[in-house]
Each structure stands twice: as C-alpha cells, then as structure tokens.
Amino acid sequence: MSQQHNPASDPAQTPATAAAPVILTGDRPTGPLHLGHFVGSLRNRVAYQDQYRQFVMLADAQALTDNMDDTNKVHRNVVEVALDYLAVGIDPSRSTIFIQSQVPELAELTFYYLNLVTVARLERNPTVKTEIALRGFERDIPAGFLTYPASQASDISAFKATLVPVGEDQIPMIEQCNEIVRRFNRIANRDILVECKALVPEIGRLPGIDGKAKMSKSLGNTINLGDSADAIRAAVKQVYTDPLHLKVSDPGHLEGNVAFLYLDAFDPEKEALEEMKAHYTRGGLGDSVVKKRLDVVLQEMLAPIRERREHFAQDKGQVLQMLKEGTMKARETAAQTMDEVRRALGLSYF
Ligand code: TRP
Image (cartoon, rainbow, N blue to C red):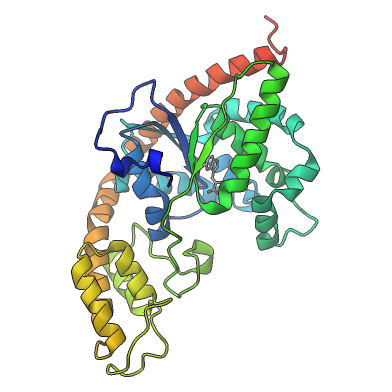
C-alpha cells in the first residue's frame, strides 16, 4: 500500500471522526474467507478502522450476478463472512459492516450510472473480461454481470469513499468508477461525487497449499480462517515444498516452496526462520521439520480467530442485529448522496 496511507507507520491511533477519509471495501459472500484474504485484506482492515471511516460491505447483490442458480449459497455466506470479519477483529463499533442488497440506494444509483458507460467500455474492462473467460460465459453473459462495474462504482461513490483497498485485479474497476464519477460531475456541473484511489497491498498474493499462484476456494487449495485444528494439520501435510528435495541430506530450494512462503508471511520469529532457511538450502533439514514449525505457527495464529468465530457463531441473531444496525447507518450515508444525485439529474419533483 502507498506510503501516506500505511496505518502501521502512523503512531497516532486516533479514532476515526466524521472528518476522516472514507474507506470502502467489500467481499462477495460466496464462501468462507481464508488465509489469502487474511494477508491481502482482513489484517489491513483491522488497522484501517482506527484511522478512517471504514465501510465494509457484504456484496451479496454483486455475488448474485453469477450465482442466480444458487441464491442459497450467497444467503448463507453473508453471515459466515460476517463471522470471519468479527473473528479477525473488524469491530462493528469502529467499522460499518453492511449488506449491499439492503441499501436500495445502491441499486438506484447503478440504474443512472448505466447511462454513463457504454457496453463497449464494459466489455473492455480487463477485470470483467478475465472473469467472463474464467466462468466460460462465452456469448451468454448475464447483463448484470457485464454491468457490475457500474454497480461497484455505486458502492464506492455512494459513500464518497476516497480509498478503496482491493487486490491488483480490481484496479480496472477503480479506474472505471472514476470515469463514471468524472462524467457525472461534468453533467452536474459540480463536484458532487469524489474520485477514489485503490489501496493495493504491497505483499503479493499468498499461493495455495498446492503451489498454485492463488489461494482460492474454487481451486480447493485454501486454509480457511474457521478451519479446525485437524483441518489445518491435514492442510499443512499437503503443503507443496520442493519436489527435488527427496532425501533429508539433499540441498532444498526455497523458490516456490509454499511451506517457506507461508512461514515468511506468518512466523513471528524471523531470526530462527532465516536459520531454518539456511539449513534447508544447505541440506540436512527435512520437510517434516519445516512443516512441523508451519503447523505450530498456523495453529497459534488461527486458534484465537477460530475461538472468536465460534463464540460469535453461537448467537447468529446478534450477528444479524449487528448487520442490521450497520446497514441502517450505511443507508443514511448512501441516501444523502442519492439525494444530491437526484437533484443534479433533475429527478427531484416534490
Ligand atoms: N468486486 C469485489 C471483489 O470481487 C467486491 C466488491 C464489490 C468491492 N463492491 C466493492 C470491493 C466495492 C471494493 C469496493 O472482490
């Protein structure tokens, strides 16, 4: 993430006030969150909530753009992802956690934004293009899927967010959002909406346990935040290491070695880790020793998260109540922007 917005480097842990910059971020609730999410976004959100006015959105409406055949999955995962948020320490008293579909202003805003983008521009959006290829839609692209960049522009601009923490793959979405914002302001003749910046984490993607570049639910190579101790142990056993490291005495390689990549990301004892790496490359250190250390590190890190998750999961009614309050708060902000937008478009009559 860029220097000036790195909360870790800012000692002033002042609680965010109304004047603080607005951050908006979100997830499609289609499955449990995993270590990749933890490294790429969740950890940062916990830090951001003290410095910014942070909105965290459960993008259920966006999730439906390619999940209309399984609405139940999306519904179920709204609470599951909310539990993941609470478990890692996103605090509803410092962050506004809300459900996208329950803020109808976002749908209303999207309806007007769709007139500020062309079909050709949507088809050229690299994020959408990649996702269409991945899903094999070919010519049968749901119109809602093709146009979701307009919806995402609404998510961001309705809250006048200036900072949007996203993965690198989402940068084209931010660019398209800003195009819509500029077009709108030109039409309104006033800067009603604000442009935003992507906050892309510096640390690269966490690979999957199988060594594939991305940890992803659809690839089945994740370690989930809510995983049991046994599940973590089993996953660590499967972690991809160095296929050429056959005998303990052989020198091992660190490149692409997922066990070490995870230790780099999570082992707090850096010095011991460096020694372990040296020993491994020299030869004489077996994979089982490295994996034993990885198991200890992950178990220690994930146990408190799992316990908090289980604690909150005991009272789903309370989780829903928290989401309801967050959604009401989010709606107030979105409704204010919507009011300004309606006026600017000559859509205010009574
Ligand atoms: N498209 C994002 C993703 O797939 C989720 C999302 C929806 C989002 N609306 C957003 C992210 C607004 C940031 C801001 O991860």
